[in-house]
Image (cartoon, rainbow, N blue to C red; front, top):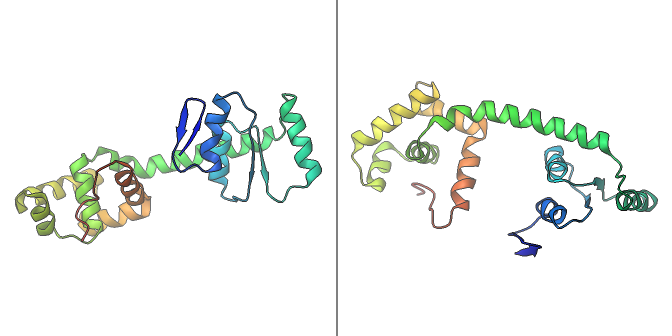
Length: 182
């Protein structure tokens, strides 16, 4: 855990530290080996003044530092390009994940359990509800997703990236145990 100003960052990466450093009033230059443009775009979105690869020449690094200190950071075109890519990525992601937002928290947990290989009967037993209740919830989530089978719902959850997102969110909530893990 790292505390910067009034902000506390758990398991910080360089990108996680950009915003708290900016809030503290610092200029921030991200020197990174990351090549994932979405990660770089997130650094730009967080307020990085410049983003440089670890292989940058010393003269270029010094020039970037001097320009940032003088209030004239380089690389505005790169930041704009990265932010445009991030916006497009987020729009696509929201389009793919939109149907899942109609699901209730219970339906989301059931879909995650189905994706983990649990049967309706196993979900009912683990949840202390009747099999009919679980089947009704499965039917409801299938209608909301616009698919005709559990297999299609699970495939949609995998292909859209929803499942990975849902499981990550479940793990970030203290005390929450991912549903029906066998």
